[in-house]
Length: 68
Image (cartoon, rainbow, N blue to C red):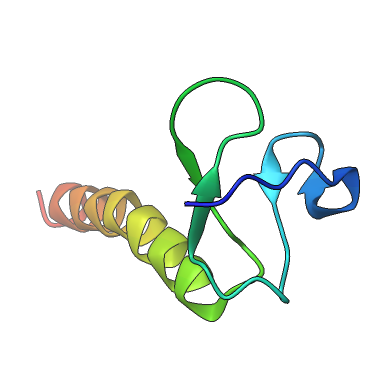
C-alpha cells in the first residue's frame, strides 16, 4: 500500500481520486485501513460491483411485490 497525503487527490477529504496512481486501493489519509482509488479503472469497477448488489436486491423486492 502507499500513503498519499496530497490534498489534490482527496475529494471532500475522504474520496481518493488519482488516475496517475495504478493502485486500486491506498492507505487512508487518517487512521487505519485502506480506501478505493476512484481514479483507476479497477477501483471504479470494484465500487460499481459493491453498489450493484443492493440495487439488484431492491429491484427484486419491488418485482416480487408487484406480482402479489
